[in-house]
Image (cartoon, rainbow, N blue to C red; front, side):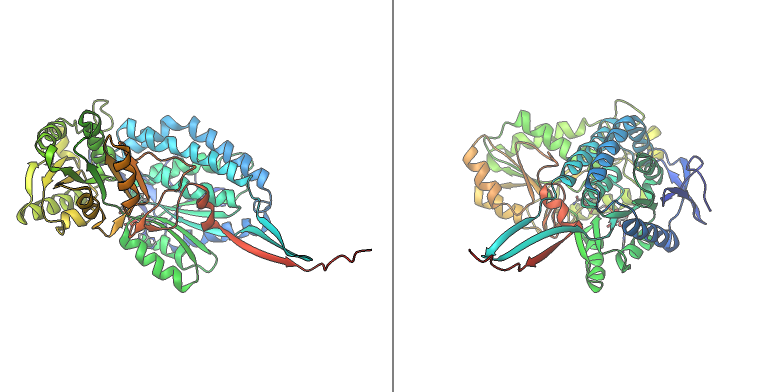
Length: 488
Ligand code: NAD
């Protein structure tokens, strides 16, 4: 059945809106109100999208015409800029992001697309006369259909983070975007799908969960999977993909340490620590969730940080005063609070209790106030497991080596922050941390020209940077043996 996306948020497959049998409600997490309905993707839509992407890869000029790919990516970037306000608005309604944070997410899309437009034009390969008369060359070819799976916490930025390089490489793509952001997905599909010169079937966008996602992971017609989501799901996907000899790029969970040395400028550092906790309501893979503080400044940090966290204005995106929006679902509020209660029962000391906001109009939504717990046992679940909410643990250390050891005592290794005025310390610690991104006196600063990704259980492969394209290309070595030209 074909329809328009105006009444029900539907899928974008082969250049058309496609409906599903089942419709579900999209809910505003700040109020519990229904804001629309969406078509729930199943195996059928996933297969239809794969078929379209496969046909388009074979029959269109997409994989061979890099000038076309660069033009389309640049034009797509402009279209995102033109629709920024609409995207920020729908992210606020459906995902709960306050407008400033929604704008932060949407701004990534055009930057990423333009970087990838440039990458599409740098397909240079390598060649060499290995020994006289023998010429070797490596050409880079797109792998085919890319399966892209992105989570609800930043569907626009993360969907485009994988789609940009897939398209730059010459792949066609199926994006499986999450049900929690179906309205945002449909608008994203409209922006992407309406790009002039984009051949039908090159980009297909479906809203679905693990059922449609699993079709991508198992399909023999999808040779690469670019997944962003939890470590648990990433491990499942990696295991399934291995059975089909697929390559996988996995961008997974994190437990970002924020290390405050005794000489840190606290007036500068503590507001950053607060942002690192409250941006996207702590539902960010890079959420600063483990604060490691030199014992000399611990008292000052307890009192100043406590005040800053108490003052955070929690509220809906619709209120311009709000600094932190809701949690995605009521179930997640309960899960987060359960983790906090468990930590307290196991000896965590409460500095700021935070917790579910139950008063006035906030009671109808899924709000959770920032929470700060001091712990001394690094093995506690609250320190080791991703909470995915605005919950910060604080621990003290006395030496640089202890700080590094505490930070690295985690299965995760996505990112870390170091606050110090000593350049030598910052560099030594940055080199010693097991993390894919390290910020000195800052947090979550990402640039498309630099690689982003995780050590350990935080991922496999890299997004952004020049390495991003590797998930989407095959390197082919061709050796020519024209012989040695006889000399006269
Ligand atoms: P999730 O792993 O539960 O689900 C992510 C998506 O995967 C879902 O929307 C669903 O469509 C799909 N999916 C689920 N099970 C699947 C399966 N078996 N096969 C195929 N597809 C499947 O993650 P979530 O709760 O939606 O997102 C939050 C997680 O994502 C957190 O752990 C967070 O740290 C992580 N994350 C990582 C990054 C990063 O760049 N490293 C960025 C954002 C979020």
